[in-house]
Length: 273
Length: 298
Image (tube, rainbow over all chains, first blue to last red; front, side):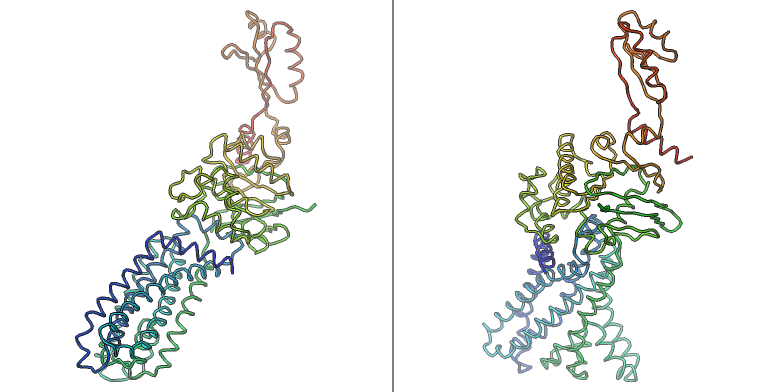
């Protein structure tokens, strides 16, 4: 336990000095503020409080931003140590590989959590200050916060796995960007294209819900939109939220971090310094 | 007493390339062993197998009765990699505190350790600002953590100035006196000559010679060199008395096989007053090293 905590403390310090903490906090704060200030227009028409609308916007933002931040922090974790030559020494210490990964995860997750709490806190403050009924939206915001952290854990795990698989940080960065584009951007486009081509057939009714749950980013969006009943404020594949039971997306949101971290541990075990 | 490190018929292949072939070696507690070899002779590969970083193709390695890379072995072994590297954003003190925690020791020991290697002044500066020699000292400090039973040191004195090297070997002597075994590789043959108990020469992945320095000298049977300085004007007389001697500068240089060393010395002594000075130069470690490496290549 001391070993894991010491690793986490060291990693946090490194992230602090590499400005990753500042970058994550500023990005989340700026985007959350912009969304909560700009998200005021549609409230009257929808008849919901201001914070609930902001949560729907924040959900769409988090789907892009959280995986990006997580991958940016994690792609260097193993490949960087291999290239600097620090990994071979570290692996001669009496610390298991999973303990090293867990230490790094704790530090990176702490940074993501801080960023999420700051961004969401600011958004809530703005919404409640301008519209008192916004208190009704707080449970949705809390749900968004913890599921954002779990989404972050999933992509941190994926980042560690990619970092272990590629020998160099540049290669790991390429793979990380590819994964982000693939899962967050292209996946949805491909699904929409398939639905349009399918015209309401087997794919739309059977395969599509499974395809959404299989992607951690889509499952995250689905879970938050379904839970808050905010599908009216959602667009794109998020509109499917009504069709899939909540516990399906919740299971996916809970299982993905474990699967990604197991993948990372398996990939790291194969690394020869 | 059983050995700290035992290696028997160790072989390592990378695809078609044989990095190590049938290497057997053991290191007793308190023994200092130097590993010599050209670049690519297999020194680093051997060290990585001992550390459990890469698996062996065949053969057996045990460290304090444990398998390389096992938790017990890792607790017993300290490693100093060639060109020790650390995260540039951390200070020396933070890095050593972390390593102490990983070995289950108190982080408060970090400052005394850094003082021991002469880094106390720079302890709170980032490692990114350190010189190569200073990074090497951080590496050294981490290798001294706890009470390692075996120290594996890859080119430990590269980047250190002569005074620091001497201090470094004093630290090693101290560790060895307390029962730690030391396996080090070095290109600085003169310092290895004076500071180790046993020498192991690797060539192309094979162990070609092993023993103490006098041992290796006897086995190589390389000629001894004699430098004779003549008193004014007697150089031609001496040259006549010692066939085969050649004039270099003011002195006569003469080589003879080990077996004729005493006889030749006797002849020089017979010259009496004509000789101003005499120096006997046994074959150096450099000579032995190239002898055994070449002999293995044939």
